[in-house]
Image (cartoon, rainbow, N blue to C red):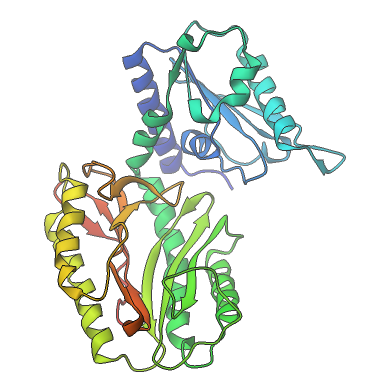
Length: 371
């Protein structure tokens, strides 16, 4: 399946944005070695266990290297190359694959310019290929690529919206199935099957929380019991892009305390929708939500308020006091307040997804929040 014109144009716009940052820094070439960055730059998703790489020149020309059996898949690049990822169907180990991928790229590029950009934290194999090049010749592009990835374009938003339809279907199924005696592992299998059926292709990720009477975690061979709360924090991967949103369901009729905790948590979302806009401090929004839940003692809210989502499950912006981010137009982010305590059997977490617009935010996950 080829990319349509709109999708190609979005990818080309990403390439132009990266080339613009290179021009500001006086760089003639940047080499990317993270799987996620290669996907962002070219549209080509390469699964784990394989090692793509790509480069972009000052003129915007992109060279892509990926496993030989995937070369025919769609991508936006000037040069499309393959490397041998297997020998007689035996997978080569990671080091061999990285070396083969980079050898193909460097052979295609020929003589390299004096100064280059690269993702320094992921470029160990690249540095070993060019031992004579002084470290001063490299410009670390990790943070630049992370910042560029924050602003989601129309094709990325569409792909994530499609992936989120799998989450919607899973929550509808969970509301039908959650009752005393339902087994966590059995329901996990049903949810995954529903997501695959909805998307019509294998998932590139499946997570995160599937436990009853717990804050979260992988499913267990355990049956839900009356009075408990069942936290579902669900996410799928569609061609490398992630979803992440949460709902909590009561196994039986919720108690007055559970309903009061739900009401306190739910009140955070109108605050988000009235407050967040480009330039607003993420840390300040976290502190405002924390203050809204402070009177819930002994119930506790003791984790981040949210985070960006995209080609990684957690990206910028960080709604977390350990970062000092500001919201920017195009940010796709989650808000996931929660309250936890044994008295609640064991807690409630609700999570909505938003995109930052020019003047505020747009809610992207408008399916039911109720217990």
